Length: 210
Image 1 (cartoon, helix red, strand yellow):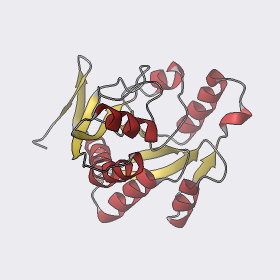
Image 2 (cartoon, rainbow, N blue to C red):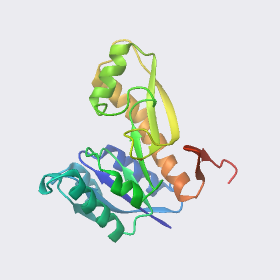
Image 3 (spheres, one colour):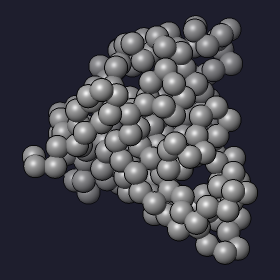
Image 4 (cartoon, one colour):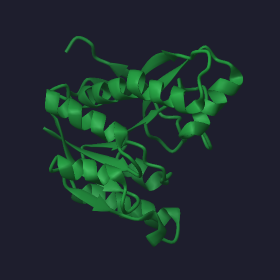
C-alpha cells in the first residue's frame, strides 16, 4: 500500500475527488496518509479532518525564500514516508530540491490540454480566461509528473472538455473540474499506486494490460 501525500493551498476540490475515489475503491494499492497545506485556514484541511486524514500546515510566509520553503516541504514529505505526492491546488512553485528527492513521484493536475495554456502565469481562472480569449472549441485537463519545468513534466493522462457558447471563465472552470480533473486525477493516482506507469525518454507510458 503506497502512502499518498496531498499538497493543498485552498478549497481542496481535487482533494475531495481523491478522498471519494479512495472510499469507493477506485484508488487501488494507495491511501491518503497526509495533507499538507501552504496556509492556515484552507478549507482542504477541513475536508481532511472530516475524513480522519492527518494534516500539517507549513506556511509559505514563514520562510524567507523558495529554497528554505522547499526544504521544509521536502523534509516533511520524507518524514511522512511519501510514495506519491499529489499537487491538488497547491499554489506555490517549489525548486529542484523536491524534484531530486522525489523523481517521477509527484503529479499535478492542470486545467488545460498541455502544451496549451500552461507554464508560468497559467493557473486558476487565468487558464480559462486565456482559452476563451483564444476561442478554442476544446479544452480540458492534464495530469502530469512534476519536474523542474513548470507544467513541463511527462503527461500521464488527458481528457477534453467542450467549450460552449456563453461560457465565462468561472463556468468553464467548473465544467473542466467536473468532467475532467475529478475523473483523471484519481485514475492517474491509482495507476501510479498499481505500478502501471513507466517513464522513458521523457514520456510516460501506461501499462493497460495489468
